[in-house]
Length: 388
Ligand SMILES: Nc1ncnc2c1ncn2[C@@H]1O[C@H](COP(=O)(O)OP(=O)(O)O)[C@@H](O)[C@H]1O
Ligand SMILES: C[C@@](O)(CCOP(=O)(O)O)CC(=O)O
Ligand SMILES: [Mg+2]
View 1 (cartoon, rainbow, N blue to C red):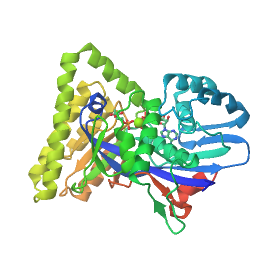
View 2: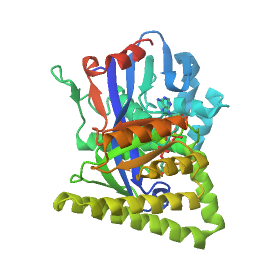
View 3: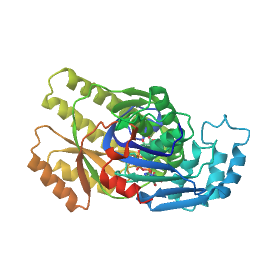
View 4: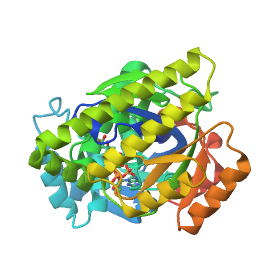
């Protein structure tokens, strides 16, 4: 079946525990959010490749004839290229003339698409803040990988005429995930793969050195997300910790081991909360783990004064917070206890907003990558995508 138009989406994520440590082979627990990135791909007859990324104010358009020289690189390598190698990135970077990290996103468009040079328009809109710790880079890479794999007919489009949304089979999801990881490599430098795994499969996951275990039995947690709006780059923060690890291996290694133990302890408590009556003590332990991990993240050098302020503001209402994602600004999660009165949450949200932060209480555990019929996508999102 030829792909004329394709609409896909993938969720963002929050990391409960294990950010950064996961890059160094430790356990992370991550959960998908009900905030998604949407990508529409349209085959055109304009003889151009157009990429519209309004979230980052980036719009590019090339004639196919301009792109033709790039295909030289793939000659004779058709079936060999399974990952992004340094030479390919150099060639693409030179071609785009990137002086701006934002253009890195455009490179992704080429990655899984190396066999073909079709005329197309790709437009992306995300409900996620970009560069804020909620996995926007992975949601974007997952959407792009799914759409381009469908376009090049490596995987089928799962949506049937009567469907509103559809998902791929396990094998196709694994392929989407592996290409999305390559996209993350371009944005992050050295990603662990946890974010693209959550974007692909959704739900809550335990991730350890590329091994993904879905956690199917987890309690319903109420989580408040707060964005300090301090911009930061995952790539820079991951590199900063690597430098610290190289400089002080015997000091930093125990910190990462401790984070690993926190993730394992949290997983144990979450599992107990589904097999036994939930008690206040379960929440007390979850809160203590949040506090210890937040201190560790500061030790790793990925904190920020605004995140410290955020933690103080929520603690004033008896609630515990930690950064989520790469830190250095961006977002934090606050665990809301079941008994916390909605007035307390409202007052706390007002205090956080008074600090200049954005807050939203979102549900967690949204589905992984999906194909949509346009009728099932919120009107405001379709209106943005339809502008291009
Ligand atoms: N909707 C989007 N459109 C285009 N590029 C995006 C989008 N979302 C994310 N990106 C890319 O991902 C980068 C942010 O990734 P990163 O620093 O890992 O932060 P996070 O993944 O936490 O949002 C952006 O600078 C951009 O290159
Ligand atoms: C810091 C890290 O653990 C998570 C980064 O998440 P985000 O890009 O800030 O959403 C890096 C990674 O796992 O690749
Ligand atoms: Mg990212």
